[in-house]
Length: 387
Image (tube, rainbow, N blue to C red; front, side, top):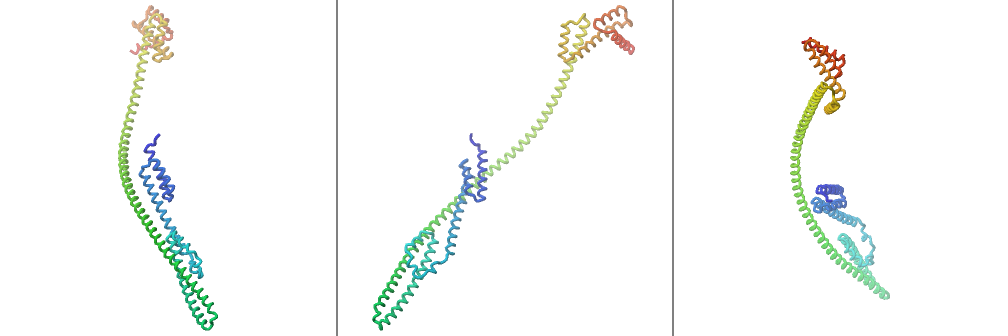
């Protein structure tokens, strides 16, 4: 499953934040590792590429500074080293192999200059020593020549000694010429090394300038791209803020509308409950009226059949009437029938024997007790008196 652009942005952002922390602490190798991880996620990400160039420039600057510090340290060590040539004994230069001088040409220009200065000092000392020996030998030859006039026997030894001195002087002059030739060769080698160093330095400076120009151009491009992206981000943020305000407005309107709908629903539910209660009440009243009418009709007949009682129980159960309420309804229906019959019997102001017999038969039929008869009769008399 591929990674979405938002997830890539988050991953790259976290990696570049870690790289920036490493750069702040000059841990450029670790910083480059984080940048390489970011480039692995998105190779053409301009922020990761900018960090890559920034770390490379920092590494190059560090290397250059390390090289300069190393050369400076070497120069200080050379300048602080004791001048061993100044304390050398006469004749030591004759024992130094001539092959050791060219090896210095392969070192740095500072080392070549130091070696050449030492050799020049040695050559000057050799010249002074040779000149001193030559003067001394000439004086000895003059002395020996004067003595030879008086002592012919020592002439041969003096001549041999003179020849030995001359041979030594010639050998010294030959060594001096060799040293001068070596100095010339070292000077040429040093000049060549300087030219090569200057050429390399100029090439490095040119590369450095080119790199600086390239980095400056890339930095300008990145800054322009960053500015453009910031403008787009600001525009998106402004648009998102406007959308947020619109959404909040719509949400508030929806909340108000929802509250109104809930109130309307609650009112409708209450109205429905009231209507249901009214319907139930009307249904119950109609059911009771139907039961009362049916009971009255059946009680006025001879008897209530099983089928009639079953119909009454069905109606009773349908309107939710209990057995006690149904029994009370039956009692009220019986009392109503008897009360109507008793009122009719009293229409003439008195009850005939025939009406009395009919009332007694009705009481037995519908189950009215004598006590109930007297109560109903008292109620009717009181009602008539109130009229």
